[in-house]
Image (cartoon, rainbow, N blue to C red):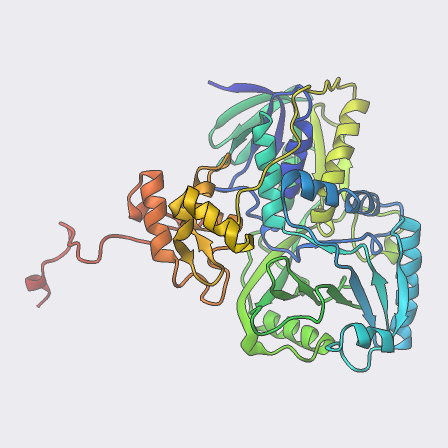
Length: 505
């Protein structure tokens, strides 16, 4: 039997989750569907974690408008949703006169976009601020409103706040087609059945083109995945002098390979930007790692390969939507529209960088589009924008830790030694409003398994905890959902269909 909603949102990445969160303030029945086992497992799980200030996007584009608006929203969002955020500023570094000309252009572009307090500093001042920077630096663009965030925490918190405000979330629910009556969309067909609605929001990220094509919209639009590879450096071995983000001067390929502090204390190096054929190709390559290491070590010569503790890759949803002046813009614009060809569709496409930053502003733009289309949006009197975060043991004082352990002894049992993640934190996430029921879901929420041993110590204990709490056998515990089980059978078990030892002799 199908269910009926006012609005269905396809995709629970940062954009879809923020959309659900902001729409939940109105008297609407909302369904958020996600094809993966958890929210935020696509592009939102593998990016630079930067809250861009807005000086890079071409003025007048959807990218520039949403980036600049959203950059000012994140401090309040971080307070309401209980998520980490730090306005540490960023630098764009120049090593030649030609680079300095580019910095002047970026300064002018940022001023048009409304980015505050930018300034160009000379090479001597840049080297004073960051002694590790390459010695031939001749200047830099300083942008104090640049910030770093946590895409995992932001996506989970936004989706959780939406669920707390009445949004239905269905994971492992893949969109397959639209339900149509003439030129009106009446819902979606999924692998878990049909769901009806008056509106459908396409926030499908890398697959947004496939979704819109099912509705007969923008047949010429295509998303070509662009892979970015990264390495993470051990926080015990390498740190920038002060937490910040350091960019090279951008080129026609994009912003370039950067070094950025993270909110978890590490430094991240990357990404490169190479088109790939598959929307599932997140492989880390030898050539790619060499490329990003070359770029990173050119920018900050003091980094050392022995400091690398993790490597990963993510995909950008690079589209081919037009811009006001494509000749001078090396990125394509965001699609944000209610198309004329069909009724009942809000269409988002090509949401690449700065998509993480822009997500809350994209939600506001969609709300405006719905109002312009005649949708009457009545605010809930009891909408609660606040999502109280659960305790993070390693961030507490000694007295706070002692009090927490006294109230719940599970917080006194360390499961992940590298990052000091306790059993209490893990249990809290398993039983949260959006239950963390896979290893990677726990990892994204607690940072377990991200330190020097990369899960080598905690994994066996985590399998047992998930087995016990979910009431499933250890063989059913997965890393990231169906098909990623850790275990096949107990080591000593001999199955009936196996040959006997004697038969093998």
